[in-house]
Image 1 (cartoon, helix red, strand yellow):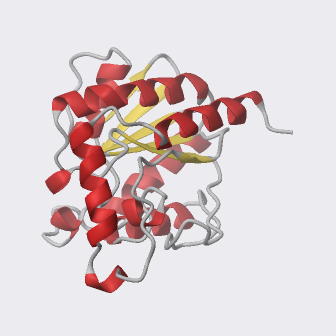
Image 2 (cartoon, rainbow, N blue to C red):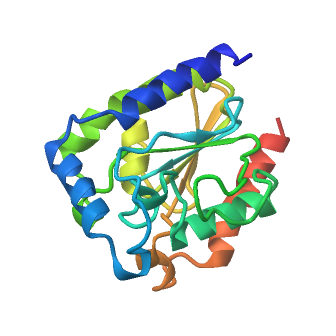
Length: 226
């Protein structure tokens, strides 16, 4: 039997996948799903808003920006089927939060242990840039998930947009984004910031692998210490 948390998250995920609040995003992901790219021309794209996934009793909550056009928007799972997903899955595996080091497609056997993944915006936005209204529209889902995932000890925000969105949703003021910055919030929780593992950051070495894995080692130490 599903736990109350699982049932509530299932209902939220159902709402997410059926969401049509942002016409620009709905049109964009639909067009991507039809036009595709050459390397995935024979694949059936998900082309719908993406729900969160992971362990309902997570101690780590990862907040990303939005699905990638040919990653999550294609595979139907966040951080799956693209280079960012490769970085996330490998780091989760190496620090004990996942059972395998890869995230390639929706039913590939990946299981998160003590971690849950969401995003600020659930549809792939043009040029990876959601508007303020689109972020606001999607915030209802993040707020609902935060209320359900009450076992969370560490919130890892990937990028400034995710960091700011979490701060707004949690009514936190005066916190500054910076890679590796962390803040004790709400008494027993910690908000940790990291650069997003996008190609823009990893290819330019703004975010190196060592910087990235150190973030997850920090997460693990923060959780194990309590």
